[in-house]
Length: 48
Image (cartoon, rainbow, N blue to C red):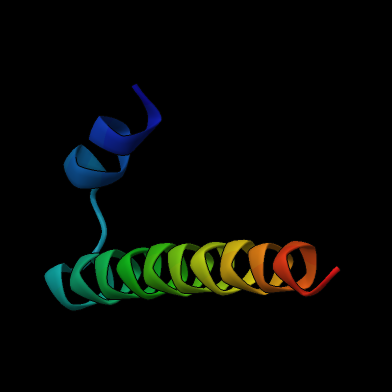
């Protein structure tokens, strides 16, 4: 498990928190872009 290795790795707690926040932001951004793309494609289909 790579994710568990990150949490047990000997890095500073501040860096660990920063990595976790960055991963959450990347996940949120990917989710929002996927939702936006899906709604955009469904609008194009309904226009035709």
